[in-house]
Image 1 (tube, rainbow, N blue to C red):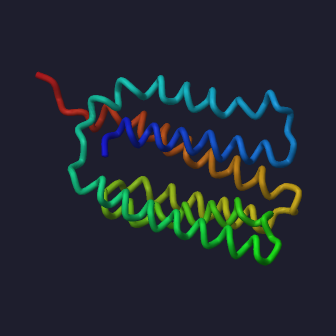
Image 2 (image 1 turned 90 degrees about the vertical axis):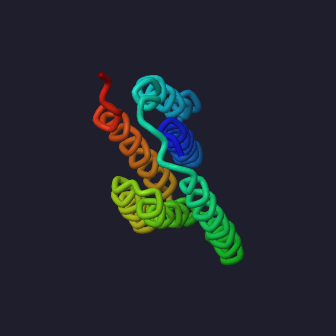
Length: 168
């Protein structure tokens, strides 16, 4: 999986997490679009430098596909269980934890050591969302997850020149 694809995925999901986190508690509609501008800005900044980093190999697609499928199943099970127990307010925090857990096998299988920190950050975000007052759960989990993903993208962007092959 190329660095550009990773940047796209991180920024798209960061924008979505932030949008949901802002939309659910009823933040002003104009502010709910700010996350998309942040993601576009990060993508624009990182796009050129990320293109100079070589891809990691064919196995990466298989690793990402497998663990993303497992993550999706976990999210669907969690959503159904929480709906059954009338606790949809817990979906964002628990969702952040499930997404965080999926970063650990990615960190090892790709390998990208940074994803250990991403996974840990999402787990902490999920726990913070669980202990937050019910009215604040969405914004804590949504914005927290977005910040973790944006931070990961930013670190990738800043490291891209180091990872690029030397030019003669």
